[in-house]
Amino acid sequence: MTKHTRIRKFNTKDTYPEQNLDNDLCQAVVANGVVYLRGQIGQDLDTRESVGVGDVEAQTEKAMANIQMLLEEAGGTLEDIVKVTVYLIDPRYRETVYRTMGRWLKGVFPVSTGLVVSALARPEWVVEIDATAVLSSGAA
Image (cartoon, rainbow, N blue to C red):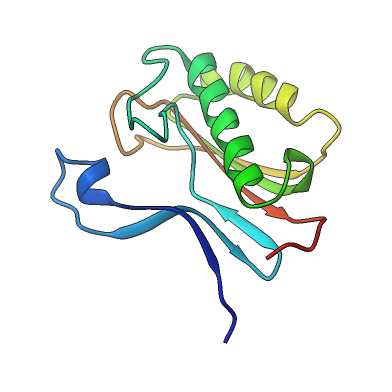
C-alpha cells in the first residue's frame, strides 16, 4: 500500500464555522511524486483570514503565494507544476488573473483549464486556483 503524505490537515468545521460541515481535508497530498493541491484562494492558510476582499489581483497573488508555499512544503517548486485550473466568478477577471498568475509561472508552461462559475465557497472569494505538480526531485 502506498503511503501518501498529507500536508496541512484541517477540518471544515474549523475553516467554515458559518457552514454546517465536518470534513477532514488537507491542503495538499503527495502521492508517488505527484502533488495534488487543494484549490487556493485569497486566504491566509495560517490565520484563515480572507485577503484582498474586493481585489481580484490581490486574491490571485495570495492564491499563487499559497501554491508556492505548499509546493515547497511538499518538497517541490513552482517549476514542478504541470496543470492549473482557474475558477473565476466573472469572465471580466480573466485578464487580471492570468496576467498575475503568468508572472508566477513564467517559463513553467503548465497546461491550463479556466472555468467561470457562479460562486465559490465564500462570497468574498472571486478566484480559485488549483494545481498539480510532479516533483522533479522524486520526493515522496
